[in-house]
Image 1 (cartoon, rainbow, N blue to C red):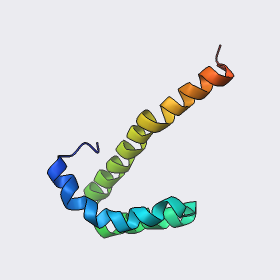
Image 2 (cartoon, rainbow, N blue to C red):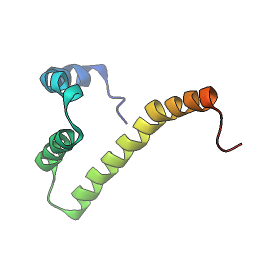
Image 3 (cartoon, rainbow, N blue to C red):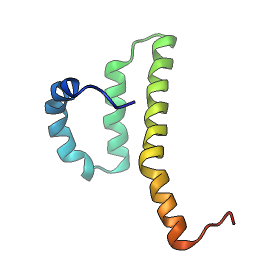
Image 4 (cartoon, rainbow, N blue to C red):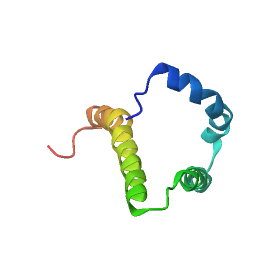
Length: 85
């Protein structure tokens, strides 16, 4: 989960700032490339390590869905009507 201590955020955020300036304008393929490069730099070279990275990616996906996509879908369901009624 992304809920890390503020002091850790303060240490990491200055390095993220330049990247976050360009990320919103990237095409999907380029964003995929950026994320892939990050994964390659942190890939530990063992099945256990790869499995751990996959777990991190899955947790990111689930948390993003829960916090961003599900509320958006709920809003649209109210606006446009539920298809599962």
